[in-house]
Amino acid sequence: MDKTVLPSDKSIKEDWISQLPDEMLISVLSFLTPKEAFRTSVLSHRWKCLCPFLPRSLDFDGLYTMWEIKREKKSLQFERKKFLQWVNDTLKSCRVSTIYEFRVCFEFDDGSKSHVDGWIDFAISKGVKRLELDFTAAQPFKDASYFYRFPNERFTSDKTCIKSLTSLILKYIRVTGELLEHFLSNCPLLERLHVDNSEDLVNLKICGSSLKLKYLHIIRCLKFKSIEINAPNLESFGYAGKKIRLHVHSAPRLLDVCIGSMYAFGSLSSYLYQLESLSLDVHSYTYDGVKFPEFQTLAKLKHLKVTVDASEGSSLLGLIPLIEAAPFLHKFVFELILREINFPKKARKVKKYPNEHLKVVEIVGFAGRAIDIQLVVYLLESAINLEKIIVNLCAPYVVGIPCPRNIRTTARYKGAREAAMRLKEKQLTRAEFVIM
Image (cartoon, rainbow, N blue to C red; front, side, top):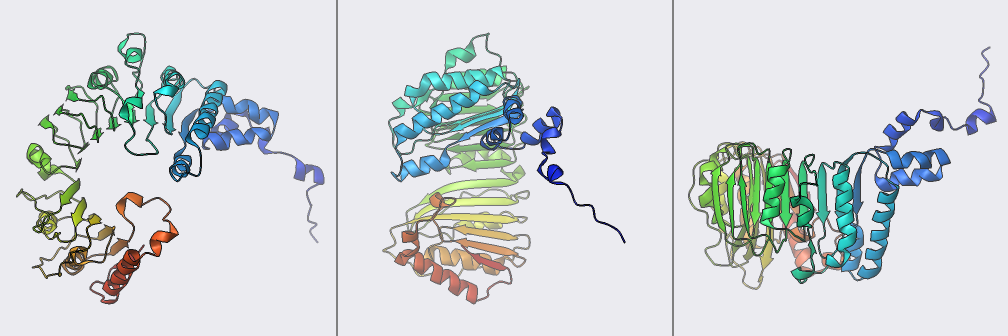
């Protein structure tokens, strides 16, 4: 009879993980976030000594705290001081020679300039590849003069080496077009540039046959006036803001466009036929509703997203020619921001053409009124091979944020849910019908 050998108390209590070589432990810890990795330091003195040598991505994310501040549950001044301490202490103990990513997400203004300047110097000195500073304000319409100003003099001098940078994302930070052009000229590996809410950005030239830039998005920069693009490797371009002078001289690899103004169609007309993904923001407050200029067939378009800010007296049927211009469209996402719901409009039927390739439809901000019901009915009846439709009752600007219970109890929310349920019960499609 075989005898089962039970492990002794000593072997049960023995820490086999800590007996692994330093290199293997560092490899395991590198998969953790900075907070998780530093928590392991309480296990033993040896683990504590290993943490500073972790090759890592430093991600200081205060998004949840910012949400609590916005809801007035926490103090911005107190939390900012605590956040500063956290970042400073972490960097002080960091002994790695290189950093892949350095990201800070919290509200900082120019009063924290000395700290933030030091963080940037640290990241650059460690050969950072991806640098993201997201200083989005908790309260909207904050005076932009208080925003953190990016240290131009640090990067325009020959002493600062930034050749390792591949991605630069700046939100609610004052940065000039001259400095961004300097980055493009002196960062030969830079592929991604995203600037959001910069008051100092006025003009920008993206030109150069050797540019590696693949992604360029300029969002809500209120004083922005013009941009010139001559980028042989550009694949994604996004712009949201007021009307500007947009000159696209050359973008032979452009596949993805995200624009917030219809006028940009003219400047991009030569590249629409090659797009695989298109996102549009449209405003419609008139009875005639959404209208698009005529353009050629979008033969390569697979993904289409349209966000419409409209009053209920308007019409969304102007979207139909755009949908039908993309014969191989695979996914359509529609976001509705509905205003003035006191003027209902009777739904009307429209002529439908079979769409054989559309598989997924997502409706965000569904109101259950005539303005969006007629569009949903059209999509359900024309997409003959539709596999899934998602109807999200939350407004686009709160998607991803915990929905307060009081919103779910409003007459508007309940009405939208009832309308969605009626559409589902009509069984206009065999596709999976999901209500969120």
